[in-house]
Image (cartoon, rainbow, N blue to C red; front, side, top):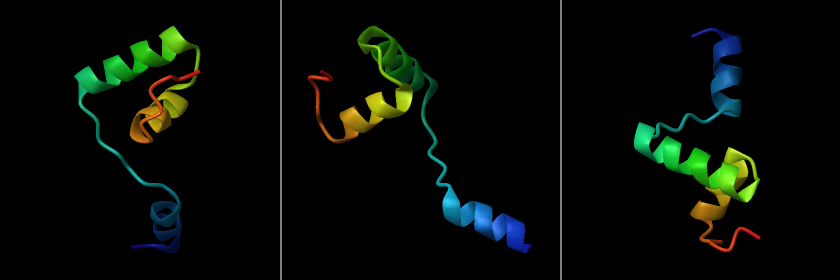
Length: 51
């Protein structure tokens, strides 16, 4: 494995997500007016109010 590939792998983590979960996350983020990353973070940290 070359150096560039190693650096990339150490900086980014890949998360696989089901299409149904992706669509739910997208709908949630659009309904609340936040980014998908922020919506996912709020779900993970159990901040359901999304205020």
